[in-house]
Image (cartoon, rainbow, N blue to C red; front, side, top):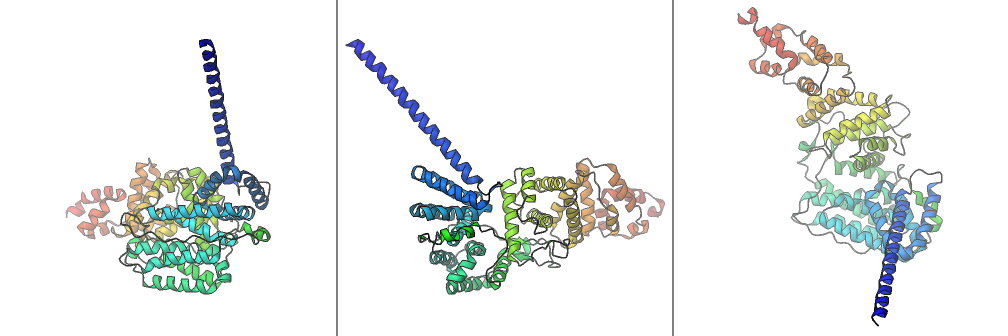
Length: 519
């Protein structure tokens, strides 16, 4: 009896081991399949020997087969792609459209999951993620996944935030921005199907923007003057670009729309209605995005012939700049990856890409009150860009530096300091080669002049970065050309300021020891 029990116990243990191994094997298989699905979904739209359309069609067929067993995982991966890979937004809306055409219930469940994520993002203040989700939902109208009316109802609920009492202006601003930044994708579709409702919403937006307070604008401007480029607040600039797009019948030339190739399939699909969404009430603990000023450095006269720089109020300018911003945001921890991704911008042959990259990066560096990333990122990434394109990028960067130096008299003092620090760092990586003769006029300027101060501060940074004595000797020779009489006639305060310049200090000390000064 005892022997039989031992045998039974041994059999039971073996059975448990078999079940455990089987469970582990099943769990491992599930993980492998999930990893495969994630790899397939996240890599779609990358360079391939096949066309994007055929890749999308093949992926949709694969996912359709896996939906019965891995529906939740597939939808979760797609929702992550919405916020983490927004540069491929239209690729994923097309994929969702194809899945919806094959499986209506799956399309509806995905929309519900994305709406839950949107509500949560608005509640906790993740407004950039929310903006990407709103834009994705807008583009789903183009893919015949959502009814246009329900999207307009969501837009109206966002615009109505501007009518709330006792709320900070930044709360109204961000909800208006959620709507405006989605219109380039869906404006044409709404114009064709719901023109009256669209116009009514735009009138409400116009009324709000015309009454906004902009007392913060002077504190955020890079320059104190508007010449040669107008310094606009970001919502004002985007609104001007949207009005321009509207006057062009909502037609733009920048957004890649792969779903147009599947129109015959998508137009027969059943559409979903968005569930009602009510913006969460104002909460003082929520941190709303700060307003900002749109940075402009170049216009069409500054770029070489053969490429066209979109105008400051062209919607294409906004779309390109935002895509470059997103590339930087995705890769800012890896300067080499960031530089390669920026130079690999898909439409690089149609635009003066180097000029737009330089403008976007300087715009971030000079962003007030603080830049989005550390100063060293911009310096190191500019160096990588110059290494990757040694024949063109250094020339554009030198042109930008000269333009910034020419306008330095009207530049915000914080931006002057950032420019000088970047300039010194950049020169330290290129053997301190520069057209120093062009700056000779600075040595005879008033000691309070920004150009004089910047030419004085830069050598300090260069010295800290082990600068060679060639530059110091070169500028000392320039300083020697200042007449002693000019120093003699300067006020004591000016002499003290000038003496802080390392190129003048020795000369002033020697002069003060002369018999002429003693007399």
